[in-house]
Image (cartoon, rainbow, N blue to C red):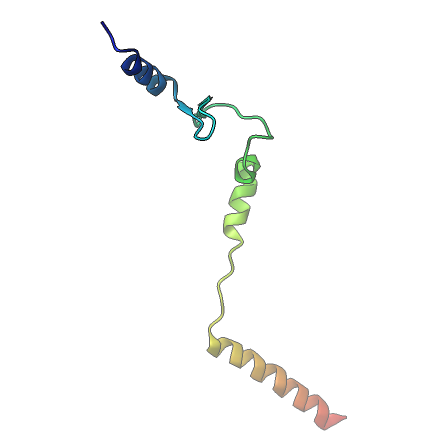
Length: 86
């Protein structure tokens, strides 16, 4: 005779189902290829591939402190020239 608990565990594993912790209800887990409604999708899943690629390219390279100093020096020197002529 087959133990019902073992048979049930095998069934759960095949159909990708699990029990809800607090209530003990069975909920079906989503597979990657399963279609989801917009309400169930995360924000990243809602984006199209093109928009996702655009976001990846938006990361800017940070300037080093030396580069910031040179920009500040340029700005200050331009202000000094304007002050001299006025």
